[in-house]
Amino acid sequence: MSLMRTTLIALSHNRALQNAIVRVPVSRRMARRFVAGEALADAIVAVEALNAQGMLATLDHLGENVAKQAEATAAADEYLIALDALSAAQARCNVSVKLTQMGLDLGEDFCYTNVARIVRKAADLGNFVRVDMEGSPYTTRTIGVYRRLCAAFANVGIVIQAYLHRSQADVEALIDEGIGHFRLCKGAYDEPPTIAYRERSRVTQALNDLTRTCLAPAARARGAYVAIASHDEEAVDYARAYAYQHDIPPTAYEFQMLYGIRRELQTALVQQGYQMRIYVPYGTHWYPYFMRRLAERPANLLFFLRALVGD
Image (cartoon, rainbow, N blue to C red; front, side, top):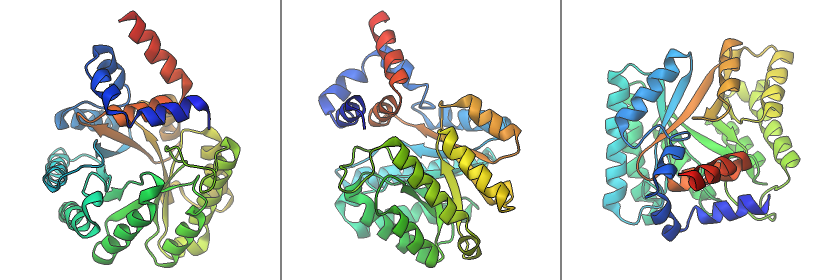
């Protein structure tokens, strides 16, 4: 992992810098490349536009690591409103939630109860909830809450980060339990080499290994479903080739990408008949998400700095 990426990820947690950045007009304009807007109405418009292009979506109300139960309850309430809005718009869109936004730091039982409200609402509306994965201190607890949710609901999935050494074992265990509904991503946090692969080629290999595990006949027989969430054409091509070689139809898996990133690749895959789902974030707490997107591609950072100097 480059020093630039490590630094930007560290800065994503810096409250003083956050307070400065969010007040700069160019920052807000730049963030709109990756964030649909600050209001739910903005996000619905973005989802409808994606649907019109033949793409599915998942909605993320930005926020993480709340400090009070009232904040977590309000965040869950926002998702209930969003689910109703998606239903009213007949949008082809589910929702993604971060457990620290739902109060995981305040207790697993409280968090579970809060998230269960969202999952139950989604079930009533025929919709689906994806549990996002956060930094490694939360991995075990996130999977634990996911298991509890799966014991009560059928409309829930989880994100697995390929760069963690433990992920292969986690995926195999969840498949064996019959709850293998995965979004596989490379991972966006700065993790130490003792628990995570840091070389790009090794992370890609880990992602491809997980893709193969999830698409294997035995896994699919146990109900496994996989979304390959990567903008890396090598990973996309690997999944397509494996599926083709094993007569797996495009409807048996999907690709997922982030709003505003690799739009040309998103469009090309849809035109080729693949399922494409776009992760659409919205809300006022966009700074940490924005910084992680800058960390992923140096070109994003250079574009931002040029705009900042010229503003």
